[in-house]
Image (cartoon, rainbow, N blue to C red):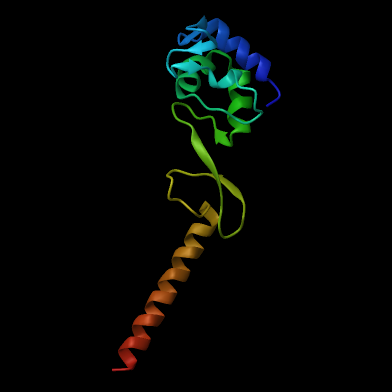
Length: 128
């Protein structure tokens, strides 16, 4: 993440769970009951739902960048996950966690599954 310092600044200034140094722990977070995930030394992509829902919307530009790094689309009230289509490989916004195909491929995949199901039914019926 390029703006990790901006996120840290936003956490320090606006997060209600961030308490600074407390109980001998630097960058204490009362929600985690330990150090804040954004002040860890690793360069991974930490996530904190309180920060994402309560603090991050204060800075729209940073929110867009944060969510694009985590491959999540910014929506009006909810964020929809970005998923790769299993048929064509294109990226699309999934409406549920079970959605596998984009809008273009959904109809084709449905027709193909119907074709296979009917073929099996006819083979079974003709063998009797």
